[in-house]
Image 1 (cartoon, rainbow over the protein chains, first blue to last red):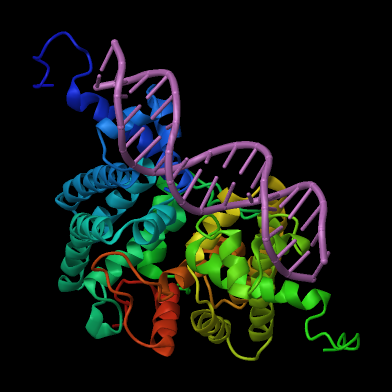
Image 2: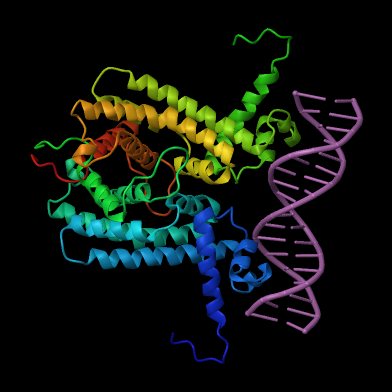
Length: 212
Length: 212
DNA sequence: GTCTATATCCTGATAGAC
DNA sequence: GTCTATCAGGATATAGAC
């Protein structure tokens, strides 16, 4: 908002780049890196395909910009919710709600694209951003819960903090309401019901509780 | 083995089709449907690319054959292990071992391919096979555990049997030792340690147990 | 049943006018 | 900064000889 001082052009230099990233985000996250062509991205933003190459040198560079933006968004939400007051369980519940509410793409596919479709350098860049921005804040929260005696630690046969963070992400991916194959219906209920179930299962598991 | 009575040809009609499916299985499961070309499959089995089309009408048909074979393999293992004696937990542990030992591909990617890269008819065929051959046997086992009071049922705020089966598959996918992005290391330990951890977390969760 | 040759299409990326 | 035109390569699939 502070940059709008040059000329009367509505779309200054950086602005169309942002529009391209937004359009690419929707397409890449819905269909995957390989399934989306640069022509589709250009058409979605009202440009011709070669115009994209004025803003991004390669398709891969565009994907990296998309993914970095998404990691930054997740990081912001997670760090904000991790700082709230309440038990570790309550804060993790908040993060679960946040993810179920705002992640509208196929998480495993993004994971696959990052690991298999990109060059080594892009992979390293995104991997570091994902680890530092998503896994690390979650791991800190789990470590706090283990220290407070709320969660089983590695000494009690469970997981390291970052292992627990990875498991949390697997739970989140499972409870995201993506369109599923075949007859398997998504977990029913709204975000509140699904996030509560997610946390309940993550903390207590499927077995009957001893006191029940 | 019973069909080997025609002529001296080592590779009768159906046999090369099987070789093609095996080669395609390795490639598709390692890199995904879109990333593997029919030329690569042909080269891996020592044929030229057009020769494939004598055995399979389209690339998609070949993929369906690959996926149906894999579902049949999983079904066989699961039904065998589900019939053993022992608690539901012990039998689920056996199935977890079986999956960690024999699934060498990227499960979420196969899932994505089935849901997004194939036509409606192939998707329906594979979805039905997957549900009937993998989800249904698991769900029957979970239903048995819920009936025996070993597992929380839907009435106790947990999951339906098929919901629990889906969660089990999510756990299995998470604990498969696929090469991961960035710095996040795979869960350490061999198959026995990882399958035991999987079952422990699935049954008891991350929270400290009341009696501990 | 496998081959060579090829049709047709789509891809990412570049050249150069305006 | 965006356009038109195009390159070079790879994709699936087909035609027809042997």
